[in-house]
Amino acid sequence: MVTQDDNKFNKNIILIIAAVIIFIFLPNFISGYYIRIFTAIFMYATISQCINLMSGYMGYLPFGHVMFFGIGAYMSAILMKLGLPVFIAIPMACLSAIIVSIILGFPVLRLRGHYFAIATIGMNGAIMTVVQNATEITGGARGTTFPIIMASPDVVYRYFYLAMLSLMVITSLVMHVVVNSKFGYGIRSIKANEDAANSMGINTTFTKVTTWAIAALFTSIAGGIYGYWMSFIAPDEVFDLMFITNSIIMMLIGGAGTILGPIFGAFIVETVSEVAWSGFMQYHLAALGIATIVIVFFVPRGVIGTITDKIRNRRIELSKKAEVTNG
Image (cartoon, rainbow, N blue to C red):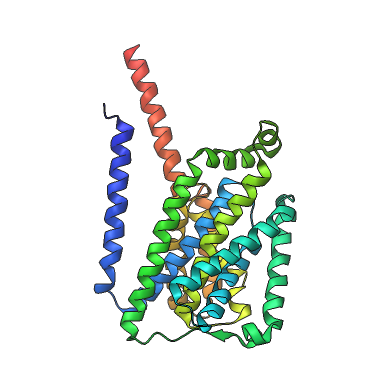
């Protein structure tokens, strides 16, 4: 017997598939400028999904999470300059990010709250300093380059557009599977009450480290693709905390603790940012900040969270009315 929830789930799947198909063919109808904007949106949505897994679901806010973005970018550049193709270099760079997340995760994830956030910022700074001083390997503070793609700008734009779109879709699907699995309930229990989760037999240390490794995996892939897209990277660029700050804002505006929230947040923030830049060039940061404050003030649970709450409240009201009528 097909229930109303099953019908709703099927409709959501159809809508999501339709949206993905539309975005796949969208580059045929827009200019290169808008292709680049959408590519950036997909990248930020991916990073925001990773922050959402750590913060929205587990309750740990890693401000220094951009270190994995930088590791992915630099390791991909180093390996590709050694002659490895991009489809081998980026996975190996991801492996490096996962190893770093595990090594650092065991001691650092013992911290909580702002202590953990500050510790991750310190680790990001330490890794950036290493990159800046390893001149012979990384190019130091001057940065390094990627191999040039021998193709027309139009082809290159579409290449990275589809790469970032695919990464966003895959990341979102994986996050959906993770948070709705038995392991995902362990993640949520840590946010609710870590001590209680630990006393109930959940290996909180393993859960936290594994969660951070998953987030590091997709963040490093985004970093590798971004570096190849830009063709040139520097330490102060790919280890910039603004990547994570923007991603956190996107998560909060879209709705923390939801899968679609980071995606909607990325679209909203990047759109507002572009409008602010074009309309208030000298004051675009102030305009963007004011717009963000207004959105957060009127939609404290985020766009998706607010919509979900309204739908839930509406169902409760209808259920109560039905009970009164039947009674």
